[in-house]
Image 1: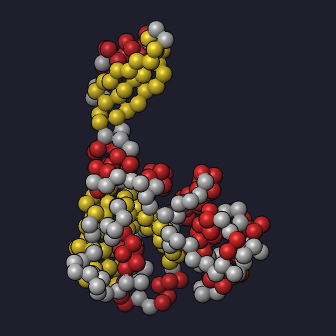
Image 2: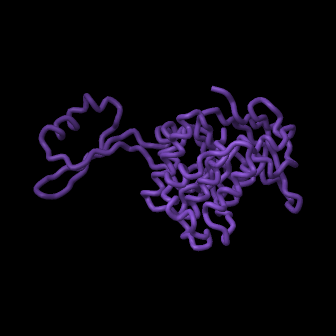
Image 3: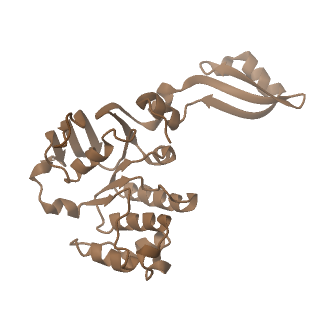
Length: 286
């Protein structure tokens, strides 16, 4: 597995700012993975993304893209990346299809626009002006735009925000399929379901620094409780008991409960990504 982005000791300060927004961070994004960058608003996530897509170049430190200095790359770099910003940007007086044809014209290679729009349920609305689209329709069209050039790397910011569960699932399935074909995804989001369902690894950004980088599974193990809670019925009333997870197969009280009681639910002490977010960042999700 190759390294798409190798970031070492990255720092960045906006001209009008007193202090650095990004403060000496180091991380890798691997080929064929979905890498999630999480953190509270103002933590520096968008700045990191803008640096990686070459919108901001006056940074300190080193960034390599497939082993090449990012600063040395010319505009051919944009042939390889697709970007879906959080706020969809389209020409509201043009139709959806006119928008996609216009944007696809920037690239040497182009995906099948009809296929993409059909997949997200927008082909039947292709001749409708984007200004008449709902928020969810604009979000879906924004994803199509990010895929127009058959990118090698996708940058997605709050990609399912504003979508109903059905359409969110379609987008997440397409992202997973993109990854399965060898694509790489750099994802920023506040939606922890997206993180759990999509991300191979995640990093938490707090005040311009990366505080923790790991897999969702390892984080759940690290911050969860090694216990099992069993809910069962006693005389028509739900009762619960908690047991240590270690050596639970030899816990006589636990085994006897399973044999003699009407079990309703069994839960491990695994914590949620929302709880992990609050623990690591110190900020509650809104």
